[in-house]
Length: 120
Image (cartoon, rainbow, N blue to C red; front, side):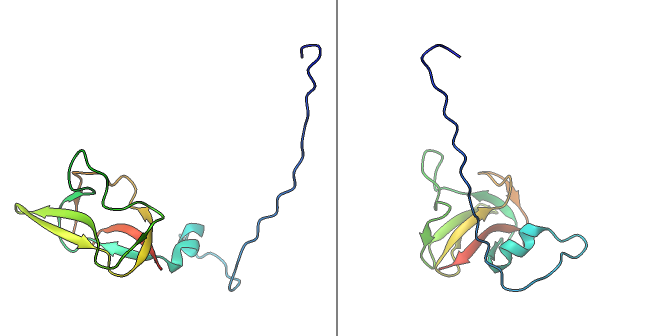
């Protein structure tokens, strides 16, 4: 330590408030994230094809995570047999998570979970 410099240490106590409805234990194979995200709804791919998160390569995604999205707004495009199918928001809500690893040009299967959203 150089002469003339004073080091300060601050100790801060932080309290986290966790809201819980009922006490329950995890079942075999269940993760804590499954319980935390249980109030989230899924956006499911209605058909197999190539998914796009934005209208073009130089354009922004159809949505931002954490922002309220109105009902029927396009959130994904799925190209199947040279046709582009709009995947719209089923109800007003906030997308909290996109399926891990999902990027433009990925192949998705019918019934695959694309995103999780919270109704707003």
